[in-house]
Amino acid sequence: MQKIFDKKVSYLIYFFPLFLILGPAIPDLILSLFSILFLYYCLLNKNFKLFKNKIFYCYLIFWIIIVLSSILSDLKVISLKQSLFHIRFLIFGFFLYLLIKKNDDFFKNFFPFFFLTLLVTVIDGYYQFFFDVNLLGFERPYANQRLSGFFGDEWILGSYLLRILPIFLCVYFLNPRKNNFLLLIFIFFYVILIFLSGERTSFFLLIFFILILIIFLRFSKVYKISALILLLIIPITIININEDMRERMFNQIFVGFGIFEEKPTDGENPRKIICCKMPKYIFSLGHTKHYEVAYKMFLDKPLFGHGLKSFRYKCKDFQKDIGCSSHPHNTYIQLLAESGIISFTIVLMLFFFFCYLLLKNYLNKIKINLNIYNARVCILGSFIINLFPLVPSGNFFTNWLNVIYFLPFGFLLYLYNYPLNEKKN
Image (cartoon, rainbow, N blue to C red; front, side, top):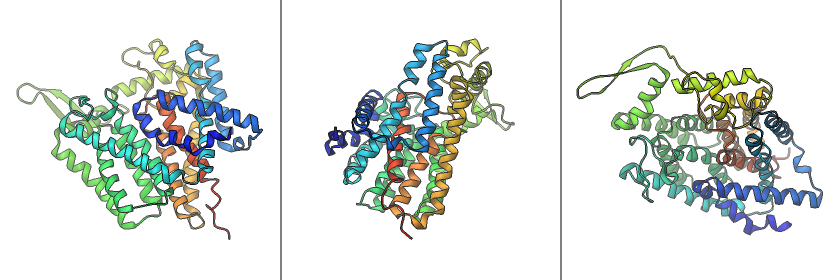
């Protein structure tokens, strides 16, 4: 069973960023397989000490709640398919931790694969922006206001780049070979592409993550100030010179909130924007209706909710107009509607727990190895942006998102059990 931690197995992890581009099936299959093998390894060796930590206990309560919610749901089979095996994502984190720990060259070998995958993805994204098709011939979607790159008809390029970025930076800081100047050039084009992807939530969370890096990273102040200036100047410049991006990343945001009023007109200008009014909606009329329906579902079953994946089936019983969708488009509102107040509270507590760890890491920065400290900032930042409450989000229980959400957990365990991370007094 020791072979599951062999260096050759690491290559499956090195290709994980690529597998995520190819879709949820391959990474979920690999993740599930290693989760089963890891449980067998623990049973065979009677070694369960890894599970003795607060995050696991917290998750275990969460898992019991979502399974119980599914059992009590009117959609037991559909819901249990999602909840019963959800624990595999966390178990994979423990497997990844031991794999890293048992392979001294893990980060040195992982970084080139990781960088090459992201480099090709970024080049492909820019190619689609300038030529309206990507390298594989996928056309640019949504009236030239979005980019999808290798994801084809799924508009998740910006989400992928955002959520994988903290893990990439963590691997960079733990890689013994570094070139900060080349990294900053790459990140510059990387960040702009997230903006060009037209994913407004991803760009907002990107700004939030960069602010975390600027505040907490132990890095050159010149680089930090330059990053902040570019973060302000580049999007403003693009909005001013590109009408499609101005429409997507500026006008539509304020129209969605109800601050701008959209009025059709005759003649050469079929659309007119009138400013300004008090906000009427949360993000948009559609989002507001989803939240209203989810809140009514929560009031109907506040303790355990209606079961995972129930929103798409139950929303019609609580809506009057346009409140239905596959999910409510906010993690915490989805938790309230589908699994109740306890699961909501646990995930919200986890969000604040990671914020606390980030602050604690900063207060103890003198005692911590520089690379470990910076890697912790990135990984904790990953959890914070993934669990940030005040933005629209994807379906919290989809396999693709869960792989990305739980992938940093193995790195987190490694960073908080690293033998040289604390200097001895």
